[in-house]
Image 1 (spheres, helix red, strand yellow):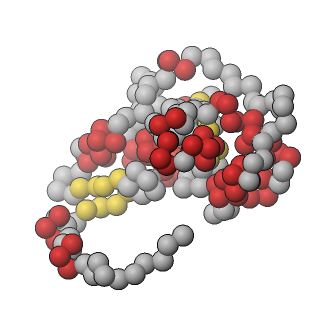
Image 2 (cartoon, rainbow, N blue to C red; image 1 turned 180 degrees about the vertical axis):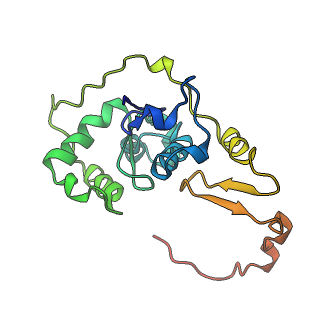
Length: 196
């Protein structure tokens, strides 16, 4: 079974789990849970800036950050990188103790702290050789609206909602309506909340 990256390099998917024999994306309910969660998360991550670039330029100048091309880590704790900063991440992971954080809730934060402290890979540190056999031959992941449409097309009278940030799929009760949501008029805006 061939493994492929979709949208961003890094996360690898078994082709048969993701694509039909005709080369189209399988319906989401036919995709294993972990794979489905990663695919949904990818739709949210595409177009996001490289974490390292963002740490360099900050929120005020984030438009200068390169767009992410690579994703490492687990969903919700992933690190997004451009090709320029992949070697820094790999050095942190292989040589500076980053592998100890693999699979933990602090994975992304630990890389961010290491990078923000001015740490970098030594000059000439090698990255990974990415083999791209035919990246244009893979379909582009569906847009979020298309994912929701596909998810709901086979359910009569029951709607599903995808949280693109977490990858969670929930059922929307018939009574759930935006009118049922609390209004801002009821919110206590005078309450003090902790800041970072």
